[in-house]
Length: 115
Image (tube, rainbow, N blue to C red; front, top):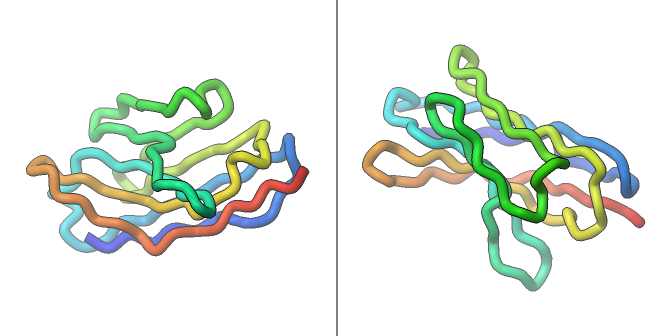
């Protein structure tokens, strides 16, 4: 599975961004898709993920502000981010998890939220 993330950028606090992640390759094996982020000097953390059947899961820090969605026909997962805060700054990584638990990671896209 190859994952190509896009949509990061620089935005002011309170603004919005949409991240996209296109999966290719052995997509039939994908079960869960999601997004992690890593801020400078911090560990990588789960932001949100979504099951093959569309059930989302969010980190407490983004609930009510971020929405994850998935278009299986387009092999794409999206992360709509609104009411962005400076603490949302980091590199956002797309991840896919197969039914056997194997993970694939995308290359990461930078999100910077200025105060």
